Structure formats: C-alpha cells, structure tokens
Image 1 (cartoon, rainbow, N blue to C red):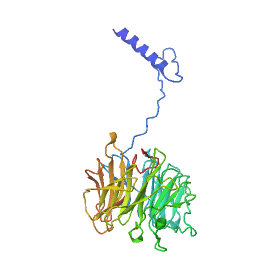
Image 2: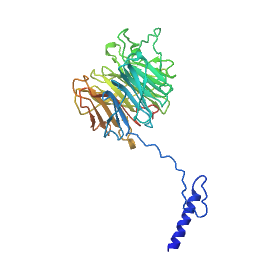
Image 3: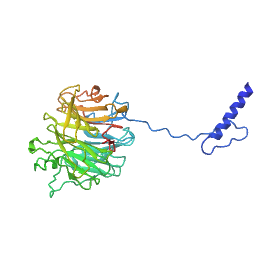
Image 4: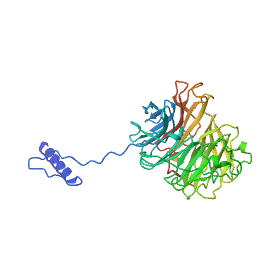
Length: 405
C-alpha cells in the first residue's frame, strides 16, 4: 500500500509539472519535489456595484461606505469648507469631487477608491463649485455658481474654462447648479437665471440649460416647446439634469427645476427635439433627479421624493413617495442602483437642513424597493451636518448608461 501510494504521488507531481501553462522547468534527477512557482493570473477586481459609495455636503464634507451603506466613514479631504458634488467611476478606483476651501474652488481626485485625494486648484473666478461629471481618469467636466464651466482631459493637471456665453446671441453667464455628460462630446449643463437681464418668453430658457455636442467647444440653449408665457411661472432655476442614451440612437433627458416645474425630452440629441415643461404642483424646488428608464425618473424635492412617469405627448404621472424624517430637512441629492430581475431600483437620498446650521441635521436614507420603504443609514449629529449629492459604483447617474426606447 505504502509503495503504491508513493508511486501515485510521484506520478501526480510529474503530471502537474508538465500540465502547467507556459514553459515549466524540468526537475533535476533527485529533485522531484523541488519548488516550482506557477504562473497565477491576478485576482479579478472587486465588484463594488452598490457597495462603494460617497456623499458630499457641508459637514462632514466627504463620507465613504464600502459595505453598501451599512457603515460610513468621514474622509480627510484637504481642509475644504464644503463640497458640491462627487462622482465615482464604474471600477470604483477613480473618484472626483468639486469643493471649496478658504482660497477658492478646488477639485479633489482619488485613484485609489477614496483612500487618498489629490487637490487640484480651479480658476479663482469659479465661485462655489456645485457639479462634476466624470468620464474616466483623464476626462471630467465641472460647473460652478459664478458661471464657469470647466473641462479637463489630462487628469486634472489643467482645467480649461469653456466659453459658452455670447452677447450677440443673448446668452449671459449662468450660475450653474449641475453638469452631466453622456460622453466626452455630449454634455448638458443646468443653472439658475441671472438677475439681469431677465429672460422672457419664448427664450426664457436661455438661463437654464445648455447642451454641447462637441466636447464643450460650442453650446446651444434648450428651449421648451411649451414654455410658460408668464415668466414668473417658468422654472426659477434648473438644479439638476439627468441625460441618457437610448438604444434607438435618441437621448432622453430629465431636468429638475424650481417653482415645482421641470423639463424633459425623449429626443434631446436632435436639433429639433421637443422639450416639455412639466408642472409638478406646489411651488417647491425640485433639487435633483435620476432617470431609471427612458420614461421614468425619481426626483428629490424640498419635501421628499416623487416618482415620475413621462409620456411623449407631454403628459406625466406623478406619485409622491413617503419619506421618513424631519420636514425641516430638504432632499438635495438622489441616485438609483438597478436591482436584478427588473425589480424597482434601489434609491439613495441625501438630505440637509432647510436652513444650514440652525435646524435639524441632515441624513442619508436608503430604499431597497424603489421608494416603497426607507431606512436611515447615516444621521448627522450637528446642526451643520448635511449632504448635497451622493454617488455609488454602478448607479444610474454615470455616463454611458443606455436605456431601451
């Protein structure tokens, strides 16, 4: 038995040596059990979808989770005073945020999933930074409330200010609130109206949303086909925009606006694509929006969350979702993560105090079932605690997500 067992062992060792891929060293006589190092493939990268996420706001400025929101950690973020937006790449390795410190506007970039951040100084004229859209480790777009649009294609070594305003075309500098790109070429930016001159119908949208199809070299204004004739009933500002490719070649875009009004289009890529203004009811601000299908979006507004069904003929079906928590907190940011088997998506909601630093602290809430149920995942402890935007690996606010027509 012992001899047979030993012979079998020797045969197995010999076979293993000759079955290895690539060139295997032939053992010297008497060295059957010498060490041979196999060529191992590197382990696959971790799947961070729905697990790795970040939230930004006033204090703490940047929060990180690596377990799907069960625990959150405050990050050392380079002594910034506040952050307006953050995005994480599909791999989870690249994270980019726009913030402000005592010296002005900055971008924070991480190449190690938020373990460390490098600070990049932005033009001093940019004011408060409120939006960023990340294409990859090299390309990103950013927007600020002083009217600056920025672009980098070299990883942030240089940020170029994009000239979109035109006195001859009546396009003023716009206090931007949000920017989101579908690709390096296709970009949508939304913002507030300038105090003067005041836009009026039919070109009232000149101060609310711009689109570029050539990487920011040229910009066009977006005019809604059913824009209100009374400027006082038009959106006071466009606070967020969610663009997506459709598999039929069209682009669907939904935008969240003030005064209870917003805009959407199912053919935003077309020069003559129709845009519709949607009245969502009470005159509260719609602060953020995420499309989950070509005709469905979730919108965070001052008092909670709405699920919106959009129709090509301009009709909408709006359903209020009951969200727990203080009415003194405003819902400022929202994102969605697809669930398996066509179920309703997971939702993440970022809230802050209605009056920063004076009433209830902000919080982060999670819904696993499209807003039917909610759970608190992070509660602020100080009145100034609050969060404005939230981003997860694999969420539907990232570029390149395509929906079925």
